[in-house]
Length: 331
Image (cartoon, rainbow, N blue to C red):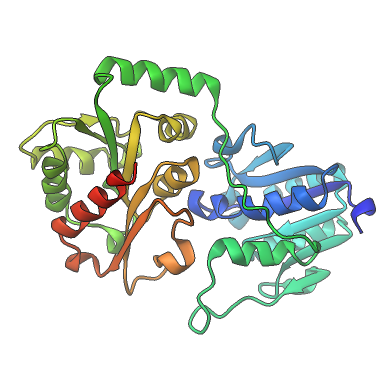
């Protein structure tokens, strides 16, 4: 099959963390088809993060919302896919519309999960039942690619660094922090109420961390999380730098690649996954008994990070601080 596969479309159109968990699968595609042209279809909000990735030749930014609600949009995408003349298409997030687009674009080999109009696929992978078999998302996505590969993932997992973004982050850091100061990046916000840790706890944690004068806290988050970060700051006794709503995804990746950043601390979120994949040790709080928040499926796969998996109301400031200290002592 390898000689026949020259152009590949890999489709993953949902959130940041879900897309990043597919980088090992895309890496395995590159190992299997080293001379093939590989395109990633990703939501337009996520696509900039992966521009310049060594395993991806091109990214097709799309609107996942428009895919769901607009037939005209889907028809135009199908036409575009047909013009690309792919030999192989893979759908990582089961979606009837994506399955149909591959079929009507006449992609000869169409791989996906045995769900949601899978009759449009040529090769179907049976999904694991989450309640019976907790499989990490990275392993699940690799299993999809194994349908067309007899190789094993080589363990490589990287994020590109945009040079312009890196210069911008370097300049900002130089203006706000001393060269001797070590940064702890904290992301307190989340769009899911069930994944939230109390803001007063984040405030107390920041104060505790900054009792060590060599450590400085930097708050981050999206523009929609600005009020949450402000409330955390209002509850604090010490002062922190607040970059909430300031950084785009490229700059966030550059920040987590910077050697000054020694630790990222967050609830289960996209920035947390950017951090550990970029090489920054993380402490991530996972909400037990909450759908879509389980470190066994979505946790960091490096050996430098720590996770806490409990109902959020039961997670104490003391145990999060101790987890942070444990990670920092390893650096």
